[in-house]
Length: 293
Image 1 (cartoon, rainbow, N blue to C red):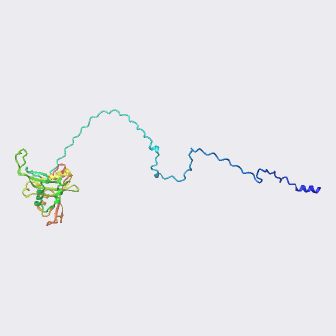
Image 2: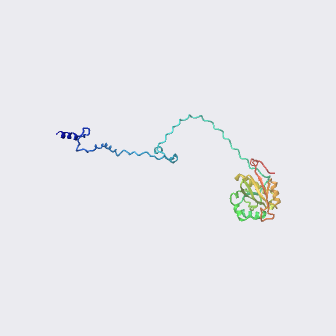
Image 3: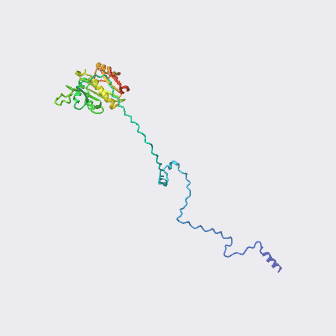
């Protein structure tokens, strides 16, 4: 009896090691996991979604030169303030208008004797062209091709070409019954415009029986005046055949200066050389001075 009680006492569990009775509805070994709160309700579909901020670097300013807001382009312009009207100024008396002075007459670059009354200086026309060709053939040492005469009839060459017409008697406009003979072409000057405002004398010739009337000087004076007025020339140049001593002396007496000699200027002539002469038109000449003899 005593031994059986001792055996029960030894088999009795300790109070510190006793466990609470197990709940049949719960797991026997561990506590249930904690529950998470329910997710929030979704937002309204009308609200825009927020996108994460871009992490790329902004482009340089020069790439956005045309990035102008539309509202700036459509903004109305500000109205300009109206200026207050000025007080009426006292009317002033009009200043006197200075009358323009007449331009000085073109000077005579050469000493001229009076032109005979039966000689007319006129522009070259198709009617005069055959006589002009005969004149050059009789007075000049070289023959000119047909292209030279075609060029002569075109501008600006025609504007610096003049002919001298000799009438058998002075023209009498009042006498209509008198029928005079047609005028005869006895002289001509043909020029060319060169750079640096130069007037180049291509041909200048007078028939031998008419060389004592100063016709060549009047032709040259008239064509220079015309070239100055129309083309603003400032000098006159020409070539003189080296064998033409009379022609070279003629230019020297009219104050042409000898510039140079070209040994092979006339290839078909013997000797082939030519002298280059020039006469300048100075400011004093244009203002009314005279360089003639």
